[in-house]
Image 1: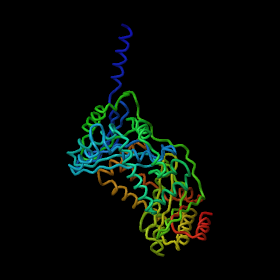
Image 2 (image 1 turned 120 degrees about the vertical axis):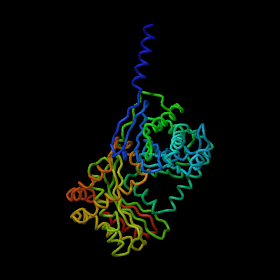
Image 3 (image 1 turned 180 degrees about the vertical axis):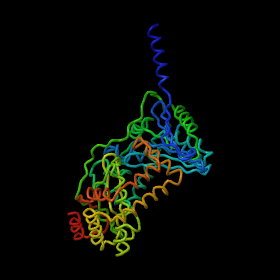
Image 4 (image 1 turned 120 degrees about the horizontal axis):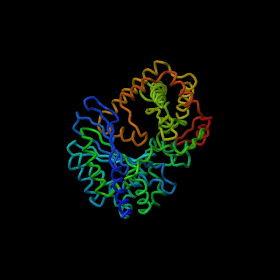
Amino acid sequence: MTSSSSATTARASSKARAVARTQTLITGENGIGTVRKTTLPGGLRIVTETLPSVRSATFGIWAHVGSRDETPALNGATHYLEHLLFKGTTRRSALDISAALDAVGGEMNAFTAKEYTCYYARVLDTDLPLAIDVVCDMLTGSLILEEDVDVERGAILEEIAMTEDDPGDCVHDLFAHTMFGDNPLGRPVLGTVDTVNALTADRIRRFYKKHYDPTHLVVAAAGNIDHNKVVRQVRAAFEKAGALKNLDATPIAPRDGKRTIRTAGRVELTARKTEQAHVVLGMPGLARTDDRRWALGVLNTALGGGMSSRLFQEVREKRGLAYSVYSYTSGFADCGLFGVYAGCRPSQVHDVLKICRDELDQVAQHGLTDDEIVRAIGQLRGSTVLGLEDTGALMNRIGKSELCWGDQMSVDDMLARIASVTPDDVRAVARDILGQRPSLSVIGPLKDKQAARLHDAVA
């Protein structure tokens, strides 16, 4: 009798703990822009941003898994799995999934990155319950049948081939390998022909079960929505699938990185018969949690982020040596990249590299002018706001923020952080980042003498 009573008390206690916790993270004016978060028993997080002035809604589920979580033998498994979740569930066939959203004029897609995966649907606000049901069903009830794995293998191999046919895209994968080597961050998200051919349905199913637990997921929705209704609908979908099993489970913490080794002064060249040489010159950047990232954003904008930027002016406007030239940053949990891309005629590659290297050295040693910094801050503030003018962008912002930072920042706070960047901040980060020895990746029809000279560009 004592044992039975204790068990009943334990169940009652567990049930009392198993309640959803809701917080208001950002309070908007008149409800507009309000961001709320609910954590369900079982560790599933749901964040929403309300925008009553629109007639659409975007619903997404973010998974705390990317190509960085793959072993060499599993390279490409995360992206492969992304494809397979569209192939059918216990409730819907692949045609049922696509037809459901097509019938209401909705859009549905997914993407895989180095550190996360996202599945999303954009629909009319009145069709949000359908989007929630379909996407949740895909994430919790995927069958991953062997015949689907075999069929989709062909599609993924074609996607790899398509990427290989675009050297302007492929050179960024090469640069990641140049910087990180045979490390998960240095391997392609799509995998390779060999690794994709070697993946089996059984291995992908095990990968799915390991990484798609509710504690690894963040649900995000933005638009003309009601937070409480979204929570009820998501909870019902996950409970119907039996996905919320361990009610005491807590969400996984944001990724803290693995002290990835970054290299400097490396050169990787891929000979290919292309009309242009595609070049990336770069160096280690900043982790996405580094407070200096705001100053780096301003530096990146001024150096290669627009038509008035230094690189655009020097390479394209003044000399006409390239049509496309820009700089970019990539931030991961523990490290980052800063790169400069240019596509030019093979005979001009050394001139382009010299100009880019000279500009990087000049900014590292002497910094940017105050006028350049003011202009870059204005450009960055404007592009930040303009980039958040649709429900898809809002969903991306709140979902990624919860998954990667475990926190939310209002647009006003973001603008304030950008505006607070000083010329000294920018000059300091320029010295730290641009003062490093760069690495170089090139794809193009380079002759032996040209290839030998390219190594001098990073000396």
